Length: 323
Image 1 (spheres, helix red, strand yellow):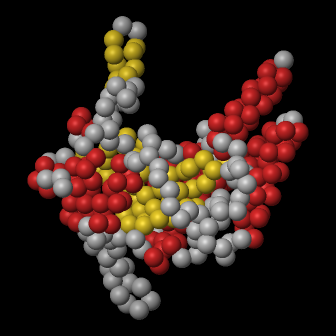
Image 2 (cartoon, one colour):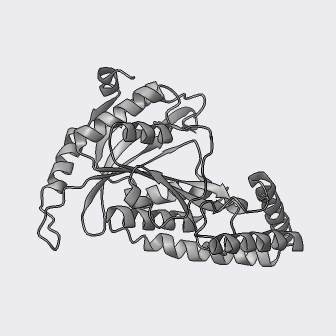
Image 3 (cartoon, one colour):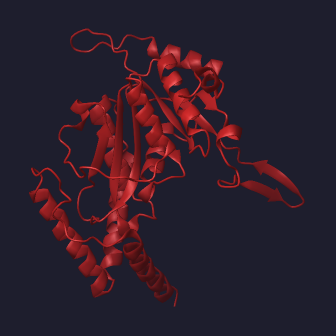
């Protein structure tokens, strides 16, 4: 078990940010029954492990509103980040270095459309000291009075872009898992600092909820705003935060039209792949009451197979357009 004292030394609070948080939580938000709402939600995602379709990245951009959200806490990136594995960008201007993109693993204060405060924890995934980091997250959640921690990201999946985005939920709040289909009975996957933080928070008796948005394999390396929209919808349903994200919705519609246009000009093999994915998706939808939706599916193409095929088509299409 990580040393709580050492874990506490891993992060520092910003006094102005704490004051802003206290001020934002001060007004009594009465429900219809007159009860005060003291809930404080922490939304978090760390860059570097997996985020198909840039789903979490786009959601974070919306939540933080251009990094203008007040800083509440910052973690020691020098201890947690291996700069040779995640090299920060530096700008060389003529004959000197003019800027350095300092890695920041931080917690910021945001507000939803009706002014309800919540926290956003983001930055590079820690490369080292995962246990100490997870202990620090537990400490911080206790100190700030966080009542629910929610994490999210995108995963490449054998689904078509012509169907709604599905989510794979997880966590220790059974009420928040209701209404979602069960995709897996058990699976072993490479770990992440985000997953370990959820695991340790749950062990500490804190409420946690996670969301993995299924992104079509063949667009998983490009921005897929439909997945970000679906994540924000699920966060709204789970937390009560009002997150309209209209710009993301508009972008999702434009991207869907663009993908349709590219596919319509593609070869029959590409169209056949997508048609097969649609049939598998629809079959799974029809089996929604069964215990494991993947149990009866046929072999799905791998992420590399589909991504390579689609990217090859796009590259060929671009060459033809330039010619």
